[in-house]
Amino acid sequence: MSARPTLRVERGLLREGNRLLAGMDEVGRGSLAGPVSVGVVVIDVDSRPAPDGVRDSKLLSPAQREVLVPAIRSWALASAVGHAEPEEIDEFGLTAALRLAGERALGQLPESPDLILLDGSHDWLTRPTVQGDLFADTTAAGDRWGLRAAPRVTTRVKADLTCASVAAASVLAKVERDGLMRVLGTQVPDYGWAFNMGYSSPEHVQALERIGPSQWHRRSWNLPGV
Image 1 (cartoon, rainbow, N blue to C red):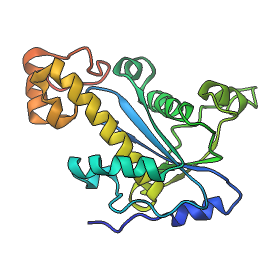
Image 2: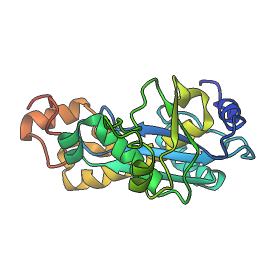
Image 3: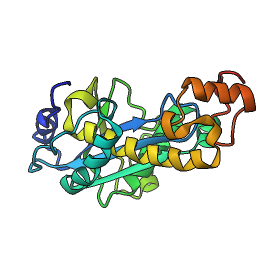
Image 4: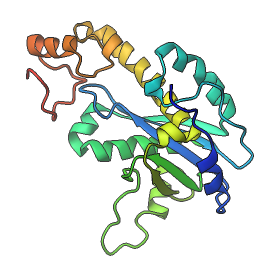
């Protein structure tokens, strides 16, 4: 088991003058079917340590993740999960779909955070600046999200392992997306989504080879067996 993530990094960022900080993480990036989902968890300088057991969602069993959801929701000042559908991934590409899912999560918050902490080294959330429009990423983006302005973004490699707000966001996103995949799996049971959640398990690949893709597959991808 990895070391427990803490709020050490987040508290340092909050002390730099940020009132609200949002940890954010995505799930479903490598799946062959279903949405990409982005979780967001908001904290401030007075937030208590995260609930016991919070880890990156990949390190937890399904039962452990399910138990943590109500505790995370109670602990966070605000939280949400946003999704981008397979047809949006096909139309806009994965990075833009992740951005769309993140914007939808942020749009559910009652108040815009001052800073967003993303896992990894790439800022997939901030919209590219339109050449000649210096304000393309501030007021306009805030309007799209239903917020007063687009928050600033900072990235940190392995934040899902070390930063409690990001780990908590990953748990929320994973549980909600898994629930969506189980529901979709009842409609097309041959792919085994109740167990593989749309990832390329042998059962999933064999079903693709046998019956082809469903309406919830990412058809722009090089799907195995298709």
